[in-house]
Length: 114
Length: 113
Image (cartoon, each protein chain N blue to C red):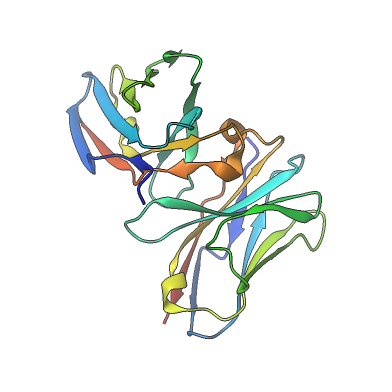
């Protein structure tokens, strides 16, 4: 069964450093998403991406965040200058269409900001 | 601002019995609801959905019930199996577009053999 993959599984960084979280969506999917889950809290939508541009973003997704699809397979989330409160699990998801019930999630990257 | 609430952080059920997971929401504009299951070290997996035009949707052992007037939905798992032990998230949206889903905090279900 096709799956979404994410690397690394765990990233530790110092506050103020830049991090790039990587995702490889399912190959024929067209919509891509990033979510995060702070430990013990709910899953929160960050951004959606379609046709090489952001289609929706939440208020969490401020200027410190950016997304990119640098080639035909990877979908990346960059945090320019990490803060302690960016520590969370970051999930990538992809869908063929926009329907939420067709979303496939990756296993997540645990980001720890020290 | 908890638009989607799952008031039971955890639930334990005996194998073979029914598991009932509850979810309440506050936004009357929500029209589409999903349940996800999440195992440790994995991402959420879509389980079952329901739109507001229905009050029940069934898929095998999983049934979701929607009571729009009460702004309440529930997930029934019958019979419960040990492999169902996971965290279950309820999510709601004003449409079926993934970017608009608001997730609840989750309920950890433990099915005891």
